[in-house]
Length: 111
Image 1 (cartoon, one colour):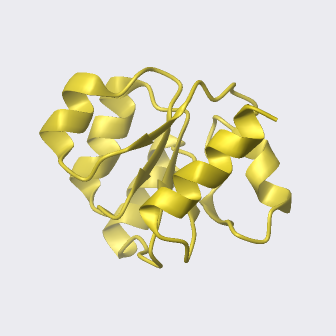
Image 2 (cartoon, rainbow, N blue to C red; image 1 turned 30 degrees about the vertical axis):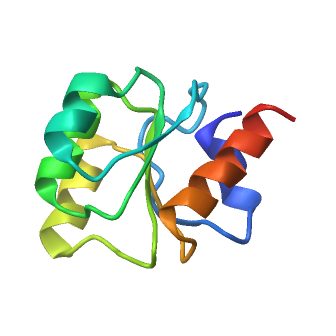
Protein backbone atom coordinates (compact mmCIF):
# COMPACT_ATOMS: atom_id res chain seq x y z
CA UNK A 1 0.00 0.00 0.00
CA UNK A 2 1.12 3.51 -0.82
CA UNK A 3 -0.13 6.89 0.37
CA UNK A 4 -1.54 7.35 -3.15
CA UNK A 5 -4.10 4.65 -2.28
CA UNK A 6 -5.69 6.98 0.31
CA UNK A 7 -6.68 9.43 -2.43
CA UNK A 8 -9.57 7.23 -3.50
CA UNK A 9 -10.80 6.41 0.00
CA UNK A 10 -13.76 8.37 1.33
CA UNK A 11 -12.36 8.22 4.89
CA UNK A 12 -9.27 10.28 4.03
CA UNK A 13 -8.87 13.81 2.70
CA UNK A 14 -5.52 15.00 1.39
CA UNK A 15 -4.11 18.12 3.02
CA UNK A 16 -0.83 17.92 1.12
CA UNK A 17 0.17 15.41 -1.56
CA UNK A 18 3.82 15.93 -0.77
CA UNK A 19 6.62 13.87 -2.29
CA UNK A 20 5.74 10.45 -0.88
CA UNK A 21 2.57 9.39 -2.70
CA UNK A 22 4.32 6.42 -4.33
CA UNK A 23 6.31 5.30 -1.29
CA UNK A 24 5.53 1.90 0.23
CA UNK A 25 3.96 2.08 3.68
CA UNK A 26 5.62 -0.31 6.10
CA UNK A 27 3.12 -0.18 8.97
CA UNK A 28 0.56 2.08 10.61
CA UNK A 29 2.00 3.73 13.72
CA UNK A 30 -0.10 5.39 16.44
CA UNK A 31 1.47 7.78 18.91
CA UNK A 32 0.78 11.30 20.16
CA UNK A 33 3.89 11.68 22.31
CA UNK A 34 6.47 13.15 19.98
CA UNK A 35 9.54 11.91 21.87
CA UNK A 36 8.19 8.33 21.82
CA UNK A 37 7.36 8.58 18.12
CA UNK A 38 10.82 9.96 17.39
CA UNK A 39 12.47 7.06 19.25
CA UNK A 40 10.26 4.22 18.01
CA UNK A 41 8.48 4.94 14.73
CA UNK A 42 9.76 2.69 11.94
CA UNK A 43 10.78 4.21 8.62
CA UNK A 44 7.99 4.16 6.06
CA UNK A 45 5.21 4.28 8.66
CA UNK A 46 1.83 5.86 8.09
CA UNK A 47 1.83 7.91 11.30
CA UNK A 48 -1.66 8.28 12.76
CA UNK A 49 -1.86 11.10 15.31
CA UNK A 50 -3.94 14.01 16.57
CA UNK A 51 -0.85 16.19 17.01
CA UNK A 52 -1.13 18.74 14.21
CA UNK A 53 1.75 21.11 14.78
CA UNK A 54 5.13 21.96 13.26
CA UNK A 55 6.93 19.70 15.77
CA UNK A 56 4.95 16.75 14.40
CA UNK A 57 6.17 17.61 10.93
CA UNK A 58 9.77 17.67 12.15
CA UNK A 59 9.40 14.24 13.80
CA UNK A 60 7.84 12.80 10.64
CA UNK A 61 10.83 14.02 8.65
CA UNK A 62 13.38 12.75 11.18
CA UNK A 63 11.80 9.29 11.38
CA UNK A 64 11.30 9.03 7.61
CA UNK A 65 7.54 8.47 7.85
CA UNK A 66 5.78 7.72 4.56
CA UNK A 67 2.91 10.01 5.51
CA UNK A 68 1.01 11.58 8.38
CA UNK A 69 -2.66 10.86 8.98
CA UNK A 70 -4.31 13.43 11.23
CA UNK A 71 -7.15 11.64 13.00
CA UNK A 72 -10.21 12.78 14.92
CA UNK A 73 -10.94 15.66 12.58
CA UNK A 74 -7.87 17.72 13.53
CA UNK A 75 -6.24 19.81 10.85
CA UNK A 76 -3.09 21.82 10.27
CA UNK A 77 -3.01 25.49 11.07
CA UNK A 78 -1.84 27.99 8.45
CA UNK A 79 1.83 27.66 9.45
CA UNK A 80 1.64 23.86 9.42
CA UNK A 81 0.02 23.83 6.00
CA UNK A 82 2.75 26.13 4.69
CA UNK A 83 5.50 23.90 6.14
CA UNK A 84 4.15 20.62 4.70
CA UNK A 85 3.86 22.24 1.29
CA UNK A 86 7.41 23.63 1.47
CA UNK A 87 8.87 20.35 2.76
CA UNK A 88 6.85 17.98 0.58
CA UNK A 89 5.36 16.02 3.49
CA UNK A 90 2.38 13.87 2.57
CA UNK A 91 -0.49 14.56 4.99
CA UNK A 92 -4.05 13.25 5.17
CA UNK A 93 -6.95 14.10 7.44
CA UNK A 94 -9.71 11.82 8.69
CA UNK A 95 -12.67 12.12 11.01
CA UNK A 96 -11.96 8.59 12.26
CA UNK A 97 -10.46 8.13 15.73
CA UNK A 98 -6.78 7.15 15.82
CA UNK A 99 -7.36 3.43 16.34
CA UNK A 100 -9.97 3.11 13.60
CA UNK A 101 -7.80 5.01 11.10
CA UNK A 102 -4.78 2.81 11.89
CA UNK A 103 -6.91 -0.32 11.69
CA UNK A 104 -8.13 0.70 8.24
CA UNK A 105 -4.53 1.17 7.09
CA UNK A 106 -3.58 -2.18 8.64
CA UNK A 107 -6.43 -3.96 6.84
CA UNK A 108 -5.34 -2.52 3.49
CA UNK A 109 -1.72 -3.45 4.12
CA UNK A 110 -2.60 -7.03 5.00
CA UNK A 111 -5.35 -7.59 2.44
